[in-house]
Image (cartoon, rainbow, N blue to C red):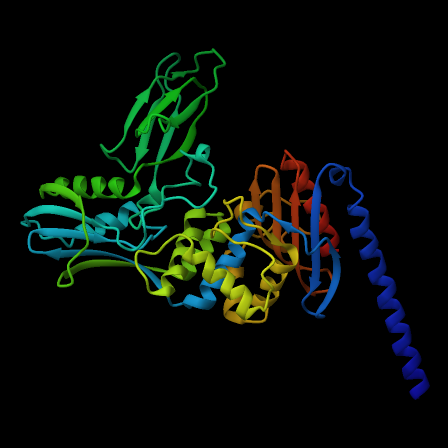
Length: 451
């Protein structure tokens, strides 16, 4: 009986090895793709269910992670701050002065602003409306962030007071032929102006653009070219706190409450709290991962920096806490650098095995894994993976964070294999001027994993 049992076990192991070998060959075959003749890739695949490494290629090579860094930032934030942590925005009153005291709520909306202002008595006299921006210093971008990435929404001017992500949404649609297109902006405000120099279906073929006059340092939004179809863009405003306060003053005026002056200033200790909006850290993590929201990731990083207890928080404090998490909690040797929370900085360099260790750590701690799975896009279904892996074995079975900047395209997260095992994987590509062929190759990797 023992001999039969031994033969059965041996046979099972031989069969398992035989099944595993083609997968490794498939991974190796992917490395011979033409894409990798002119660009580079790091790849790690780990079977979390079996607790075994399936494949690794250049796992220790340092690479710019782009937005995949948000996985590290998110895990560090939930671990260090706690899932019940909130980012709070206050409306305070002292005498005839009102104070907005913020802490970089990246999801603070126009509707929430209006709701807060309803707590101001209709007969109030407001001598000064103050912006309390004492939470952070005045450096609104991270180190190495590209100056020409403004005026787009993915690089807003970070401030403790952020309204609609520090952006205005501009929608345009064609009107009658050769007439200026119809334009709508939200939220409405006199803080910015619109110059509509475009034409509807003019037949000129000139590219239709919506841009803020960022080179001129103004908040003038210009529409130019031939508008033949509806188009929407989000433009960042400068500076963010002035935009927030201007809209607040306008909404107070709409209620018949005039504001004599707007200024920057810290709220005194003795204040009455009129209203507060609390943002759960889990909501910020979910938005950072699902929509690759850079402002959300940076807000998490700043609040990690606030753990030092020194205000105003400097931009470098958050990355230092993240590096401490990697070093002390995951025992990672300091052979990397993290300079921001979103991955926009070209100075941030990590390796595939470092990201893999974070994914494994999160998987082994339910509250961290749940926070990631709530926000990670699902292949072919949601977020930045909505249009990927369709028609492959990876369709609906990959939950991962994408990352894209010029010359870098990355993907990392979890996948469900055909045998029911949960896999963790990291793919870091760099050196390709175009992202599309890289994404095609990454989807092939996902297809192999899920088969």
